[in-house]
Length: 272
Image (cartoon, rainbow, N blue to C red):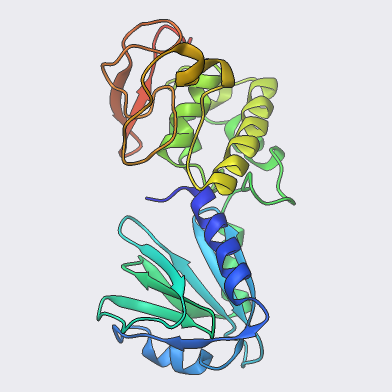
């Protein structure tokens, strides 16, 4: 499932290609065709992200001005220059203008919603490190009282929005925190340091459209080691490195199931 930086990058991509311009909207697959007909020929006014949710705003209408998209496990976006090629019948939503097109396939959610429905989605999500108005305090209130592990809390979108399996594993490693420590055993200083780190790491993710979490002194060039070869790209400390040696201590990276996902950590570097 894409992490929050990917959705913020998609919002940025939509803004650059379609904002403040009339957009042709269609649903070649047919599952969004009635809503597409209501939006076709209108102006796309904004594109926003909150956690793993994308919102595309259109002008006018009778209150149903937003397309809400959640990619889920199988959703894919593709952008290209005009003229758009004939769409396949797997395209749920196509946006097009005289310069660009965007095709959405296989999302968990693609729905036309009202402003009130959009607000309800925001209200149930936790703060997002990539939203300028959000900070660490609201999440800290939940974390500091919780008997749940910090690794599970980081994946709870009601507590913090946008963090997925990669950022979870990597931020815990970068701060030397055992994933099985309880939320209430995390100090305020530790949480604020993790939040600040997530802000910076995820901003870099938006900028480069990939996740890199190793510090400059631990890059392949600095350490004289081979670069990572993985379809997720980017240099990481522990994610998907089970049974390999830790870049820092040389100990074995471990993996286990937690919060319905595979967790990765270094027992020597991450102290409970």
